[in-house]
Amino acid sequence: MSSTRHFLRDDDLSPEEYSEVLELALHFKENLFYRRTFEGPKSVAIIFDKNSTRTRASFATGVAQLGGYPLIIDAGTSQLSRGEPISDTARVLERIVETIVWRTFRQVDMLKMSKYSSKPVINALTDEFHPCQVLADLATLAYINGTQNSAREQTNKQKVEQIRGKTLVYLGDGANNMAHSYLLGCATAGVNVRIICPKNYSPNPQVVQDAHEVARKTGAEIIITDDVNTGVQGAAVVATDAWLSMGMDKNQESERADEFRKFQVTNKLMSKAGPDAVFMHCLPAYRGKEVLEEVIEGQSSVVFEEAEFRLHAQKALMEHLYIKEGYF
Ligand code: CP
Ligand code: NVA
Image (cartoon, rainbow, N blue to C red; front, side, top):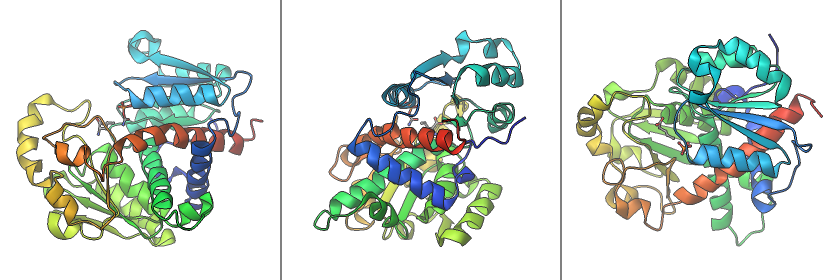
């Protein structure tokens, strides 16, 4: 057992640390080789129990840019899939690699991996949370907002400070990993967050309570509503996600489509948000379902900047966790 710092959910970073990581992400955007955290090369295990394009590409490339070796493991080809205990896996990997990045199903398994690893464990998506995505989204917001205000020269620290008090609105499945991470991540960053969802797809009440607890320190406002029209007013970011997440029962697809239809992101809905509102989606997106082509391919869409920021934000996170532990 160890007391190592991990990133299993968004509020594992304090508000101060979260801002530091966002600022570091903006430095990495300016200079891909800003830090050489894993020079050696030291290696980082990146394990996938679910499909991935962005997470795989950004972690592998990020570790390489930090001077390290990315060891990509598809769970189907590892002993985990044969039932080797997570506690054994963690105690093997901690002796060989410097950080463990894992995409899996259950948050409790992620927790177990972290309990037995003396090296940082990073949640690359579970059924409950997707904290690396929200870190990237908020770094994107700081970057875009800094660009929109380019008349005044700003430091990266100022760009991060200026996202405080802005409002991010998320529409769709309020009970999925993105909704939960938006609640915790935005609350930690001091960004107001509104989850607009059908009542029977509301966030886990414990996560809402945890978000309120962090928000008391940062001043973020948290709203859960099923009222689309008033919900999007004044938003700086309108975000959505697939209506059916990985691992969910495919048979639910048509029932969910019926429930979520009125939460679809259209140009009409975007026009009700703030004047410079941007559209975000973690991707992959399903055009004609949660978002229309006119929005995702439109002027307000920043989905590809957002995908690029996975690289910068995760490098910043790995540097932060690894340095914090004094492994250097
Ligand atoms: N957004 C995201 O995590 O994408 P991947 O599933 O492709 O990694
Ligand atoms: N909610 C989605 C996010 C994909 C990146 C899922 O879990 O499938």
